[in-house]
Length: 304
Length: 240
Ligand SMILES: Nc1ncnc2c1ncn2[C@@H]1O[C@H](COP(=O)(O)OP(=O)(O)OP(=O)(O)O)[C@@H](O)[C@H]1O
Ligand SMILES: [Mg+2]
Image (cartoon, rainbow over all chains, first blue to last red; front, side, top):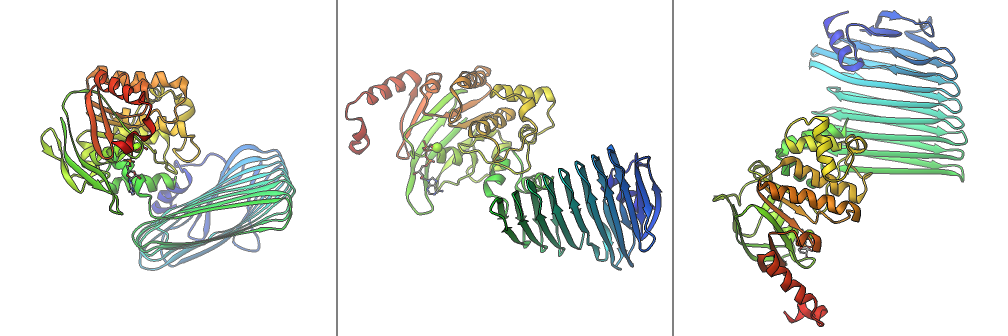
């Protein structure tokens, strides 16, 4: 692996010169290292780029790593990873992505991840994105599809740390009886970066729920747009929250949609977009911070 | 020493709120500022902290004119203000705020000591976000703790007792007494509470944007009590 890959891995997937557990590292469109464990099987797909990851019934406490790195311009990486999660599973999946460009050429990673989650299982999915280097457009366009069986939980924690010129994130989920889909997304854009995030969640199961929290900070002249469609097709509870801070000439647009298709669907959306509240800055200034320090601190906390 | 010279302030709509306030606070000790709602106490505190700028008048700290200084510069010179309405933050924890207030990383023991002064258990609170999930009394206590954490020369508490339950009240008074006993600096508490008035060294009454009374605790208290016994009390302000 090259030095840029190692740097990216450190940032996005807790790489400490090795991984403990099953993993697969992708570098510039190729799998370079891979390991399965007794209950987590990682196999390359035969018909197209990507992996089939199978987690056996009853697997508990394992963490697996599927990071992808693009370390120079001129790469347009497309990968299909399917996760087949059995019943009674409790695992963490770490899937970071970093794109590095230097010479002005653009680079892109497009990961299409599908999760087929059984019954009574719990999956925590962590996804950190970063763009590094100098000139050149860096794009990360993840597609995440989730199908939850009954009494399962999928918790998706995604962060765009910085430096991604353009991102289009698509997330689709179907939630079964008694299952929950929980999303915590944070996106930072600066300069002229663009971010689009787009959720469609169908709560089909009785007693299903979704909790979608998105926080964004758009600085400089960057733009973010947030779309969500939450459909309650059964007795279910849905909550979405979209908070955004804009600074300088940053812009954010949010279009949340709630569809209650069942009399017992209870859906809530909250949104707040604007500059940092003046009184928050003032409070931190009374503690001795300058206005700039206060702003940094507030943004840092907001995106944590 | 803190000196206010002829401070005037009007609302953005042009209504005069402070009409020439002059005060000189030399001694270390506990000063309680009281007076009717809307009299201008919070506005005056904000002017001292630099959050509001006076239309006219000057503020001197140890002889230095600080009227033009920013909130940050005043904070760094040792002025602290605990807001009447504490600010909430999405994403800052109680620990974060206390560390920012004291200007360094605090140990577990230090956080615990600070929070116990305001009657909170560190284990339950240090990792909580200072956001809308905190109750009114909880956030008020944390606000007070941020000012205690700074250990400034001038600490202003704006109605610290508001929303604090009866049982914790004595503990809170102890914390204020502790500052007073340490003779570390000037402590100004804005309050309507007799219990707090009764531990003051000096009481200042602000009414209609003016200093109505200013003196030692006993003198001012006995006068205030005699006024409140007046049968025509409700119409007192109209007569004045
Ligand atoms: N930004 C503002 N815009 C308009 N009016 C204001 C503003 N700030 C303060 N005021 C008015 O100034 C007056 C004094 O307010 P202030 O908050 O200083 O009173 P206070 O003495 O602290 O009252 P309380 O005991 O209720 O806390 C009030 O009538 C208030 O409505
Ligand atoms: Mg007030």
